[in-house]
Image (cartoon, rainbow, N blue to C red; front, side, top):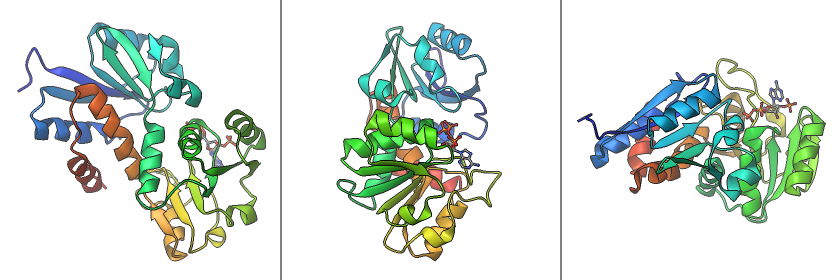
Amino acid sequence: MIAAKTKLCCVIGNPVEHSLSPQMHNAAYAALGLNFIYLAFTVRDVSKGLSGLKELGVKGISVTIPHKQDVMKYLDEIDETAKKIGAVNTIVNKSGKLFGTNTDWIGAVKALEEKTRITGKTVAVLGAGGAARAVIYGLKQNEAIVHVFNRTLENAETLKKEFNLAGAHFLGDLNLISEMDIIINTTSVGMAPDVDASPIPMACIRSNQIVFDIIFAPKNTRLLQYAKVQKATIVYGYKMLLYQAIPQFELYTGERAPIKLMEKILKGLK
Ligand code: ATR
């Protein structure tokens, strides 16, 4: 029952009304009988939002678009991984001090590993924004050969230098994309409501490729529809959402996350 000792966790972002995290975390708390509650807060001013949550003793704070970079300025401590990625998606309140880390890269790696080995594989990362940084960090940790493809070449070049990647290319370099073992979309192209768009055409997908779209709304993005037609192996974006939430849950509560249940919630919400 919600009472004076109930611990609060939340996700902050703007917009957050469509977040699937509250259902996922609350179902897990209920299943384990934990005295926790998880809410979603629309936050415009990160500085004010975080100082309020800190004062209220909120136990765990998940961070989503557009605040993953901004929050870093207001934390007491940030781990090396989040510093290298340049973004925090997870904040834990440890005795009044806010500690920032990043679990997005774990989500991307675990989602991929359900379908393929990563080490030694050539990967086309589409996009060079914040999401790409976490995905690329995870790929490099697993010794993949990473090429980044982006609409603005300059942004791809920046990531190439920073993460010591194999190549930086225009998003239109379709021949090269079609030669990679794995294609990962980290751009926002195809995200609801723009559901008819795909970052690349169907013709550059081959049957022996793995195609992973980190977009989870809609579940079947146009890119994944193309990949299915081409008989490629697909990885859904909701898997990354699930696997980034598992370490968050464990950091916030100190308990093992009920993964199967959390996955069922995400699937049911589609
Ligand atoms: P996020 O944090 O979600 O990664 P971001 O940092 O704004 O968001 O990055 C968005 C990425 O999607 C960028 O790589 C962007 O390309 P640019 O660097 O050229 O801006 C890419 N992107 C967004 N809209 C796009 C579009 N219509 N076509 C191609 N790429 C697009």
